[in-house]
Length: 175
Length: 175
Image (cartoon, rainbow over all chains, first blue to last red; front, side, top):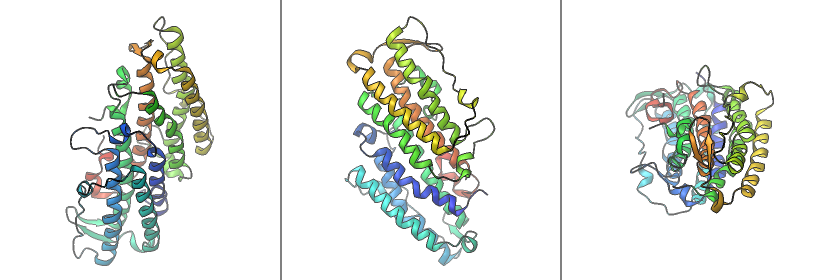
C-alpha cells in the first residue's frame, strides 16, 4: 500500500489550481475540441470534476463513516453534468472547482482521523465491500485520470499536424 | 490542419508554470515513483523537457530555416539527460525549464513569420522531408505527452490502492 493521507491531500490540493493555470485564457479551439462523438471536451471534464465534488467523494466518505456496510451507497451518475448545460465560461467553472475542492479538502481533514477511519468499509452498489482508504485513493487517481484526459483531448487536435512525428508521441498511440 | 502559431504558443507558454504549480512541494514518494524498470520518474521527465529545449526545438527550427532540405538535421538523443545525473531539486529543475522555455518562446516569435516559414521543409534523419509547422506542432504535443506521462506515473503508484475502482479509472488501463 502506498496511500497515505498527507500525500493524497498534496495532489487533491494542487489539481484545481494546476488546471486553472493551464486552461485559463486558452483559445476556444483547445477548449472545444473532442476526441470524437460522445467524448468530452475540456470544459465538460471540468464540469464532471465539479459534479464529483458535490455528489461523490464527500457524501460517500460520510456514508461509510455513518452506515458502514449496512446499506450500499447511492450510485454516482458519471454523466449527470451533461444534462445541465452550464453556459458559464471556463474561468467560472475553474473557480467553482477550486472553491468546492478547497472546502472538501478542509472537510476531509476534519472528518478523517487516519488511525480510526482508513480501514472502515462501505458497500459499493456495483463492487460490494470497499475500504474508505480505497475511496480516498480513487479520488486522487480520478484527478490524475481527468488531467491526463484533458491533455490527451488537446493532443488529439494536432494528430495530423505533427506529420511523421506521430510515431514518437505516445499520447497519440492510445487508440 | 488545426495548427496555428498563436494557439501553439498558448500551450508552450503554459506548460512550465503548470508543471511547476503541480509538482512543487510534492513528497518524494510522488517525485521518485516509476512505472517500472527503465521508465522515468517525474524528475527525469523534467530533465528531458529541459534537454529538448536546449538541443531539439530551436536548433532544428533554425536548421530548417538555414539549410532547408540540403542536409538532415542532427538527430536528437532522447535519453541524453539520463547520462548527466543532475542532483538538483525538482524546484531548480522546474525553474530551469521555465527560464529556458520563456527564452525559446521569445526566440520563436522573433524567428518565425508564419506567412513565410510554416511551409518550409527540412530533412529529418529518420523520417525524411518534414515541414517546419510539423516540428512546431510536435513541440506542443511533446509537452502534452510528457504532462500525461507525469500524471500517469503518479497514478500508477496507487494502482493497488484504489481497489476495485481500478476498473473505472482509464489512466490505469493503458497497459
